[in-house]
Image 1 (cartoon, helix red, strand yellow):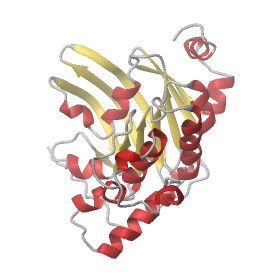
Image 2: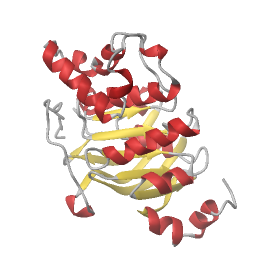
Image 3: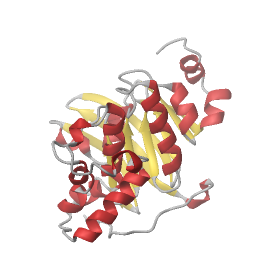
Length: 273
């Protein structure tokens, strides 16, 4: 059987600017099934994540949306007795094929979690951590990357005079934007967000949502959200999942106003969930 390898991206790299779906897919998910031992969590998922756009995954708790998100950078590999069938294609390579460099894959996909998880280091060291891992030590390059990432996460003006202070001293909303800065510092192609606003207050949530709008086009963003209002505000495309199955996937406006499946309509109108 042939093997596939994924090279880590060089720094800096090309940034995608996409205004329509004609730019192709960042991720192609094909007949994807996932099992924990004998229990099946995902069933025959097929979807194309469009390059440069924001894709939301919505659905009730336990529907499989976070499981699917974590399958995109193989974070689920850390779980015992995991089995998958099907393919996840990135740059014409199946990321689950034998021989794939999982570390290199994850470098191409920034990840932001539900709760802010800054390291007990300075703000500066938090942001440039991915570059340190790459072995980059040039001071000017690190400072430039830090400023670029903090500006990209709309945090630069708030912290530019305290870069050597502990990141743990930031507010919760600032910490989450710092984690986004860290995720984009090495300029990944894809940004994965697992309910990034679930632990934030409304003001901090609004800032993160505004940031997602600003990052659209620079990155292909996949966001899991428990808030249908948030999905409607930030995403170009929305996927509704239920009981491990992808029920409906399309343009956000269409999914929310004229859903094709009665289960989607029932969830959106609050009949269950």
